[in-house]
Image 1 (cartoon, helix red, strand yellow):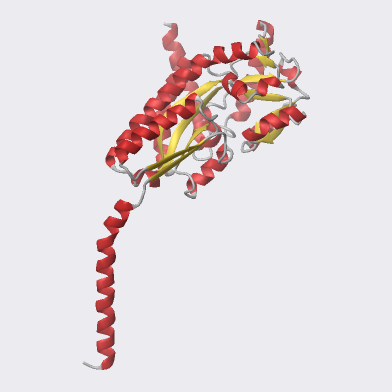
Image 2: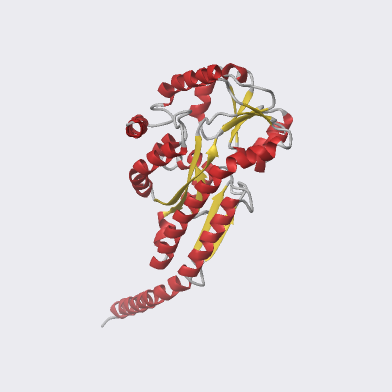
Length: 346
């Protein structure tokens, strides 16, 4: 055997030994690597939503094993919801509890659950449509690399303003908080004579205090928790739209978990979603009462004023269909609602 052949043989042998060594070490390395689950959210620290996530994390850690690590980031410390969606894609977060504002960055069809003003008349209608659409929605999220663990909501959006306003025209000329990640909504608002100011959630309170914005669409709970009502001391009591959300994690993070960890996380996510929905719906009146004691004035529209709001919603629907909400999904929601209301009327 010549020198070249002997050298080549030694290299092949060494490569083979290294390959065997790497293959033998891989299962051990994987077993020792901690499984991390870092969740982002806008929810306030120590709130019900935060506590539900912590409970979920404890049950998951116990099932996953001692090397599992669980962290919840509250109060938007990881950025707005669009930013959290981006962080999940690049692996800085493994999951997030988000409203439709962030979820639509992953799957646009979910916008139908939140971006149709004055469409839903009750929580029963919201629940019915969500459950009808849930299989297809979750399948679409899966196609985009995300697992939906549970669905929640955070109450009805009301309008909190610095000055009294009860009619749609009363709000013209006032500066509205608008999600920075929803340019379509901003364009629609401008076309109707309203003034949106795109911001992130963390900017709401200072912007309200300085007069940069004058109106905040918010649920009562978050208006109370965020102290928005201290500056925006007028609330219009209409159920403009439900804040619908979900807890999602990346498929990559899901696949790294043990079957026991996956089962515990799935069960915990469903349980957390149910807790959030139940508590959020109960908290609406409690939050409004607490704010009224601290100076909030509540305005209930008259039937005539309500007709003006309904007319505004009817004008909005054609603009929303195909822009903020995909046309096919828009039509599907209306079909589910018609069937539900027809069944109730019999």
